Image (tube, rainbow, N blue to C red; front, side):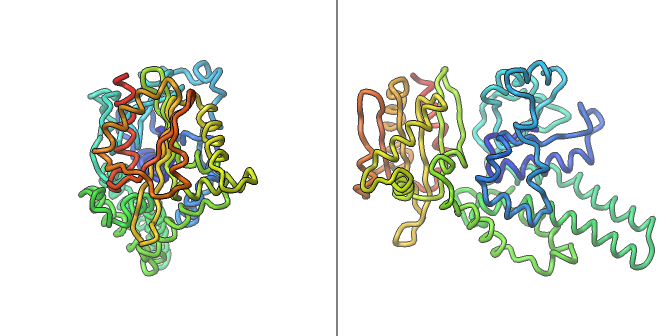
Length: 402
């Protein structure tokens, strides 16, 4: 199983699917063991404080997660992990990208995702699922898919305990089983709540999200240990606040914390999603370079970040709360010469689609410039319902048309 560049939804989708599927694999499965592979190096887990907070609730150790570091070096990966001996199931994306895509895309045999269909997964994937459906979280769709198997496993665990135990031992066996279920459920529900603002984001929440939360909460409440103390609002705030706690990270780490990348027509697009406004990022760059009132520290940092990854277009999407207490989005796009025409096509479309307007901040507006080498544009995004899930396809379409 493979996640995309890992955020909370990718993490929980892969772990939930692999956990249930490995205990109840279909009879015709390629292997009875489903391995969740996080598409990041192990060191990048530390960039995601919300992971560590969630791990304490779900009894997970970061050292037990399988990352790119556990694979052979890319230079000889194809020889050591030969494609014909693998099957890949995608969660939270539906097209295998990058080096892994070049080598293993023909071995993709299933998908559960909530992004736009890219027609890169075979239409027939039995015995694995092919689910691509709009909703707030990929984990909601995974929860729906594994629900029946999970219920059977839970019932079997209780029945097994009843068959081998008596009295207090039976009670303890049942409590242990329900406790494990509660830990898994808290792991899964975290990303659904964060992605849907605790089910309050009307533009994102769909029926699968509501049904998944109701089912996972029922699992939590069945646990004698976890059920009485369960407070969904408190749990959501704890995870969400941890996700926003990026002040201790360097600017480079902030840019790569929630970063995703695509290749279109031989050119690369990268988008960083950040839970702080552009003013915060500019100030962070100035502090790191001991400069004040100078946006060049920020642009130099973004230039290095984009250059290191060979990006034709690099975008930063920010979310924050305004001084009036309103949720807001900003968008920054910089393009190299080979991405400038695509960037212009995107702007022509996105002004209407996203409600782009000039930013009121003079400091940020200094970023909007065009030179012989790099073009930069910044906007306030008035349509706050459009996240990276909607913005990325617009940028990719602009690159495809060029």
